[in-house]
Length: 88
Image (cartoon, rainbow, N blue to C red; front, side, top):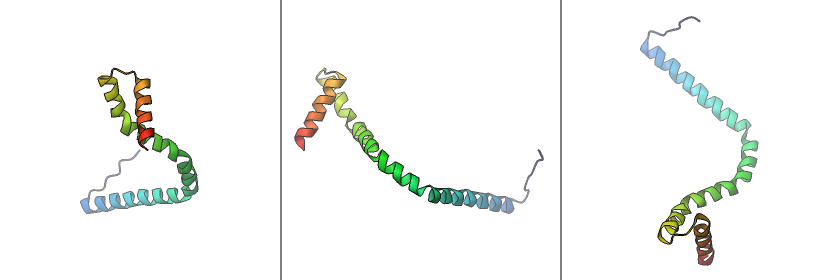
């Protein structure tokens, strides 16, 4: 493979900028082609993402229940779930 070097710094920056713009435009083009597939998969994955975020946010409460009340993980989760359900 031959060594290809651009000695002029301005030309090197221009080639780099054009390459980055090309990669970004290719990404937008690809997202445009995949927009239908992405919207369907997002509709399918939305409940799982929401459940993950709720579990992530409420995990410190379960850990606190485990430490303070000496409850197991399942019991702490049940107490937190019932507390959330009753508060709504």
